[in-house]
Length: 375
Ligand code: GLY
Picture 1 (spheres, rainbow, N blue to C red):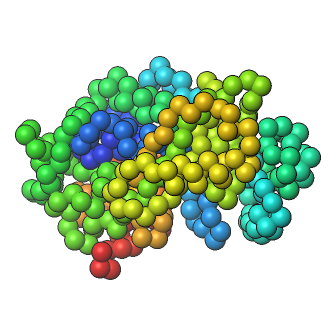
Picture 2 (spheres, rainbow, N blue to C red):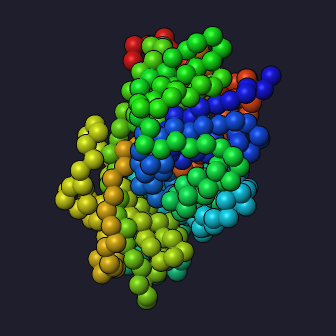
Picture 3 (tube, rainbow, N blue to C red):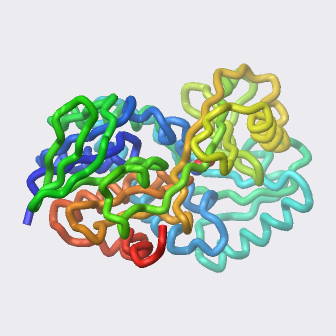
């Protein structure tokens, strides 16, 4: 049975991606965003599609979900480019996970052994092999792991593309719309908005990132346990002869090159609530971590600093699927993986919302895993 209409609360990469896949199927969709779409965590991300390099030890289920999303990302990007007319700078050069000293190399080897045991597509590179791939890495580095199947995308272009594609296909986006709460009525759900008429739909998708638990009217068992995890990020300008072609990451920082010459350097991970101040300490720690791997960055022009609040869930896994009340669908808690997971979240959520059935792909990431616990 097809739902007739959906309202998506939250215009970040997750909410917009779900909305785009739904309007593509001819479904009626309204996105309600408290500020400007794509102006929070999704914009501040680096755009790594880094299943092997980003997912931690023993997070195998999350790894497999990221791999599945990475598998569908190239087609997702092509379709988005075609629907929007915006190119998203999809890059498939791979990631180098670098050990800048002997201790880091020991830790890297432990991680590599785990990755090999679990069949990640990674390769151990000596210092010389690493420097052959990226001559601007520090000559002091000890070794690296090359994750050749990790990709990257320009998240800001993806956000622009999503906004344009939704509008081109007839979806509605309402910005500067503060949600006062959701109210259930019969088979429908009303999203009440300050100073505007409510939006009524068959399903409301909560995709409000770190703000998802603040939406009034979510029944208590369905309130998602998400909190903001602050990330500070820098943007530099690569100037010849300086050049990086791969994503480079180490223990304290990552560097993500864009085709237009920008270099994104991130990111802190801070438990500071909704505090969005940029701090000297945050910038210092990111720069120090990046400088240990790529000393030449100190000469690059600093284009900007930005702060985002990632939605971290209680178990640091995404929260996606129908709630106990099936007029409510949750898509939040993507934490450090919002960009890579947007493809699988959007495709599977759209399928779920159109069919009314749960997605097996998101079985263990269902919001119902929290439903019996105190929030
Ligand atoms: N995925 C990168 C970050 O959250 O900083």
